[in-house]
Image 1 (cartoon, one colour):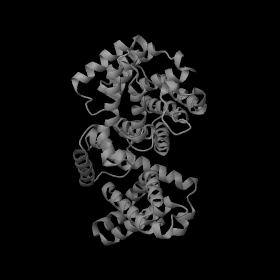
Image 2 (spheres, helix red, strand yellow):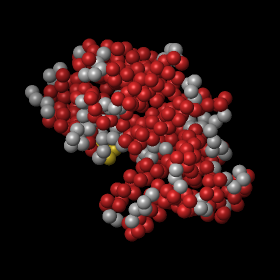
Image 3 (cartoon, helix red, strand yellow):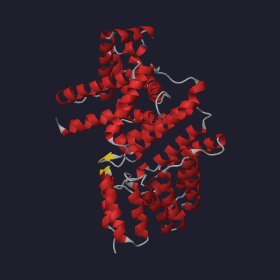
Image 4 (cartoon, one colour):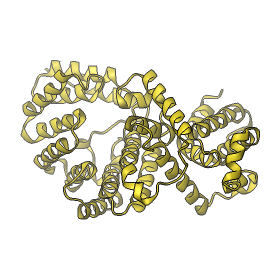
Length: 423
């Protein structure tokens, strides 16, 4: 297969897979089956596009193919046919028969329908019949477009363990007959937390990819932002929904400054802040203000958004209020204890109180062993060791972090920092 066509198909799939699964899931009322049919459409693209060329609207082609496959399955399967009759020949099933209209009519109204389907898919994947870890893993798989390997890395578990978890989650949803719909208002708060966490995990994968040769996956970050905004509209009185939107808007505002002219990563303190997106900054700060009016005491997303706001308000890196950031991480550690939060607090303390203070916290985390597979721990230690003049130790830690990451750009950055150490 032509390598360029293969890359194009992979890129289209990354962008469109969640929408395809969501649309088909509305037809068949089974998330696992919907994903299977979407995968069949991908296989069909891999077979046909290299010879026929990539369609003008590849996402529509994949969706139409998956919907036709769903109709074929519904016709063959008596049980699913009964489901189709019970829901009155769902409008989506009827539309799949009108291929030209579907392909040519992807207007704003149709996009609204797809957006509703994505929300339904998200709340279905985050149904309380599943464990929290299963909800997050399934959402990352279905809506984030992440591979099982990438999800396993995010959860710091073996790939085989994560694969089993995802399979069990889909089976559980099917056996429980979980409806493909938004929860009623009285259940919204109960299920919103897992959905918000899944959206943020999707955003993080877009902001800094766990694997591959790209430092960021902007389309994934944009999709998470769109879903977050929809959730905030769906739950306007939920402060954490606005807090998450604020956090993502503020972080996304930096994306234009996170790569240099050669496509190499640029760390936060080295970024040209004039390249930060002013519209996203203002939107983020406004969302944070809405959240603050709704919530006391502050909860995790609002606290993280407050941290991002500290960076946003500093027009130059030297004016960053690191004492405030360290205090906010301390508050966050009380609300949401986590070794990753403690590692971030170590960075902030290192900036506020000196690298020795930060290194003491990072060393304590290393002794606990909870972040043994997390490459940011040796990276943080390396930075702090370098500031203390312990360059040989710093070089070794940068090299260790580089060996642990699966992202090519990140590996190059860490190796460059290792080479830059001078005794």
